[in-house]
Length: 395
Image (cartoon, rainbow, N blue to C red; front, side):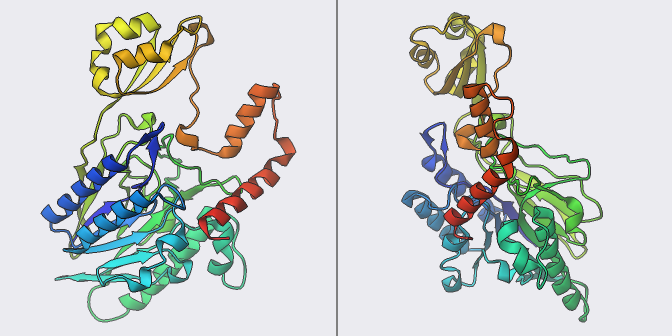
């Protein structure tokens, strides 16, 4: 069986104010063609289909066109991420064709999408993003779980393994299993490559999920981190992030964006291959005095790129942005950081990152207070998380 693993489309996202919907439509059209050319049996979309709970109309249209194109020749399995509204994304799931499966409800965790090939069944278990506060009572049964991502995702995987155990008890070879999940997963050493454009998942001060949670699963298809990578796994199963199909921050400038082609044979994962997704434009970061940036031939390659510029003159030059735009027509952002101040600290792109960290930095800069949040941190975090749940329809 051949599966195509993708995630983090973030339809409707902008890049420093630049509308990316056309670029996103082109990237998804490429994914459709890859799926067709590789004759995949299913496409797995592991969360963050949209960039926000209420996506723009054109983002919804791009999603509909892309899924319809895929469903014309293969299965499509979609689960929700932390950016999606689970209720909105899953609103029409009961009306979909037999080839399109959208799973957004915690009640369905442990119920697989059943696929098959000449070797038998392949059970795909979509696990939507699990907000700990909203799901720990459901997944804990009669006793609420700890308010941690690892606790709720661990309980979800217990449901998956329980279902697998009942099927493995039947005649024939045990079925191969695929889990789709949206979380911050890393090995025992905490290895993971993060970027500026991923929304913080911290709840109760904890966000990391160990790879051990996925023990016994043939292939774990992850979403959330935007760089393609394989967390350090314990055991024979393969655990991978496909990464996003486009670069959504300058911290991703070095990423080779791709989708993940997974081959399953009778025993398990026979091979994993990354298929590149062409990017609309390269990214470049330039730094120096304004006169050097606008005249030095060394920066010629950046003229065709999306550019982030750091100007290091002691005094902010007049007309800085216009001068830079004259040299770099695709300039997206520019910062003035005098050389004497040292390195720049760039805030996460488009408001990403932990909002309480952003608030703390702002108050520290504005009021000169070392710890402006202090004892109020947990209260502020609880209010922020409640607002998120209300916006995403999971409160």
